[in-house]
Amino acid sequence: MNTRNTQYTFPPSVVSQIAQLPELPMTEIKVLWKRLFGTDTPNHNRQFLERRLAHKLQLIEFRKTDRNLLESNERRIKTLIEKGKLRSREKDYRPLAGSVLIRDYQDVEHRVVVEANGQYEYESRRYASLSAIAREITGTRWSGPLFFGLKAPVKTKVKKGAKR
Image (cartoon, rainbow, N blue to C red):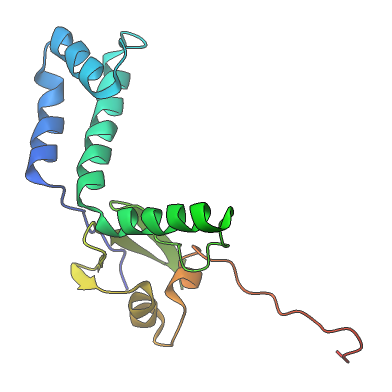
């Protein structure tokens, strides 16, 4: 087997904005910073500013398109208002769009990209669940969140008086 090199494709507007950052005059970098962060630039290190701006542009773009995250947050807010506390986060393990999940399995590095539409990309193919990808990699049924380390293994409780 070989290692996988899959790249996430960002929306063209984000790619073009980020690609233009090195060509922008420093005055425009400062104006963009002020518009995105609402403050003056914290320093004059161009590389630092470009990286932070690129990150902020990606966050803004993904925030627009990630309906699952918005719906999940709305449910959590409603629960908090109704009950005064939140339930434990049982199935709320989904990472942000654009995240890359990496798992070494049998000396091969496997990379999965979380997409904004709720799907996952693995080896240039789309999957609806991490469990389907874990099965593709191992050949056996796995909990995808467990396989990729997003969820801790469940510890079984031993009842008092039970024999081990």
